[in-house]
Image (cartoon, helix red, strand yellow):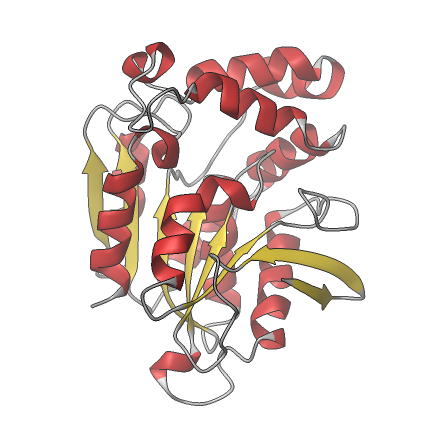
Length: 271
């Protein structure tokens, strides 16, 4: 599905079903140097079970036009404009408000968006998250100067020990290879832009403490990119938030345990 957001073409995958604005909305937001495809299983399930799904390509990523946005605040405003475009929050009913599901950088975007546009957001799920989300110079500098090296570093750190050796539920699926090719498909400069945006975001704890909508924090016990301990502290900051930790899973939760992620999201969003 193509939309025009802020005067530029944006792409969103609808899970194999036409987007029906009268249905409850679920918006999936990818992380740094990724695109909508990381949500393949989850987006398709919701689209085929009574939800209107938008798994977005953020500006400058995947099939969406424009330059990548340089701050989490700008990304949150972009998602807010997307929600306005599809009529989220146009009425007082709960069904008109969207559920936001964000991974890593996308989780920060979802958090800030829910803070800025509470009338458009009904609930949020923060996957592979940490607030704050600092990025060290050991990664930021290669991301700017030697992108291939930074991609290799991220790929290693994003998977659990089991994930680096295989173990995907899809026979023949090489998780590290698929992740590497996905990142390589993005435009030059996108990776450093995204990591710098995560590193600079300082409003997360304030936004978390002010949330009024239901929230889920979904962590991997072997996540080396966003510590599950920090994720637990974030969940404790959000009033009434639910914390779920998937055992033995790294930062690439949707690749390493797609069914676990889906089951958790399904239990949270369909209640």
